[in-house]
Length: 118
Length: 111
Image (cartoon, rainbow over all chains, first blue to last red; front, side):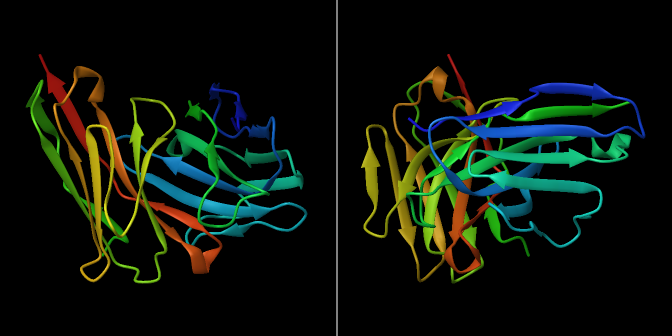
């Protein structure tokens, strides 16, 4: 089946530093990658949508200069949290849509990254 | 108003019980619907899609009422392993296929 490998699974960083999270589709091509954030006891909130080779589209209220998304290939998308602060501590998770599926299905989630900023 | 709203929970039920979750969505352009299951500190996993005619998968039955913009999930003969958070999800086809998640309903099945 389709697998998305997300790394790191857990990261602790100091306030003010940047953290990069990678999502790789291992056995399929992902034309679209969705990035979500989930705070404790809350739902997954969509941060941005990226299509391979083009700029990401950010949801309202998400700072594009703080959350840098790169989707340079059909198998790799990255999210960089720049100048991280404690309020950025959250569970970040990616979801890839397969190239061979339409917009109604074919989503595969990464295993998530738990970011703690101290 | 949230785009997808669910029962607040948590639901604490004994093994063998039948439990029902409700969900409403506000965007009438929503095209497809799902129930996901999320275990603590893990990624969500697709439980089942929801079709207009209603569909069943073993002990799980999902219903969709497009006119009322209402989705439900029924779990029969609850097992301990059913303990998780259940997420109601809608797909916005006209917005590039974004998945919008409800806040989730926590289920705890006790022996």
